[in-house]
Length: 391
Image (cartoon, rainbow, N blue to C red; front, side, top):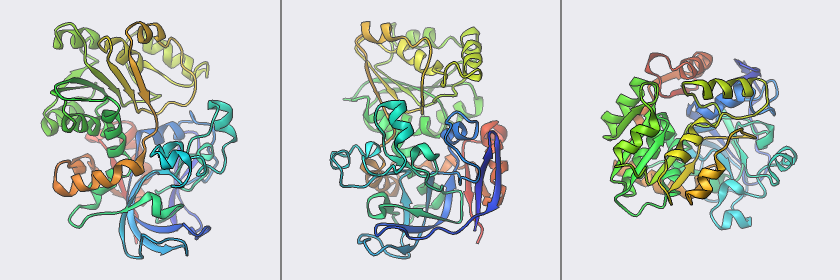
């Protein structure tokens, strides 16, 4: 079968790879119908998560059709159209029983690196390097999904593939970001990043009761899309001092909650960003924490900073003093897909959330390399490329 594979730092190629097979009783095989690119994939491509091997199949946000099930699968049937959470969870460990699925004890068969890096190993993630289990990804014609009954969910009739695909990762990540904010109604929420996750976080905050949502980015077309589609306020950080603007927009108090939906390759302007780029390029720090710093400094006293952008290691100049002395609540993590996806599919079917507009560039799988170039370089107004395997 054909798949989009990692070929070395900065290199991708579509190549032939072996078709997946059932390996355990709970496995399912899914014929991929739509697989979205994701900003966190860029961290793998660019070598910031050093556990990739040549030939690894990329992709983790997808939906498709069940074509084979293992003997232990009870909830799913061949022919079901399903969306699959990118985080792999066993469903039976303590973390899964308490709905902290991205912390699953049993789904990462290669935990040594992450145990050394972080003290404990979290869950495995499909298509996300050998640090996250070494699972083949979804930019392929077929994919093996472990623990299929736990991680795959039937898509309601009438929901298009290019909308359902975002229920795999962008929607639950955005919802969790807003959920972490503990909104009770009437709050001002600021969101760093107007990509798919940032826009889904903004929409989720609205549904959960935020009175005002302010989205921060530098790309005019993304800011315009967020304003038009969601009715949010926007700040262009390339033209405006973000901290000053947020103080003015909140009568000096600051947002009640700040959501960081950018991650370890965040962009900015000015000398601090140049400093971060040099340190990251020299591997003196693994991540660029620009947007996290801003979120902590901008948030009102006693507020919440929710971090769902992916970070992997160490950062410099983290404003711990500001977080402590302002009594901020910091919440962060990989999304608990299995907790949120069923609810989000219901909201999709009801029309309460409509992420289909995010799929600005649907392309066949064979054009996957071009799709990533459009996405990474932010060309042609690309919000998300969604790959459709041929055949």
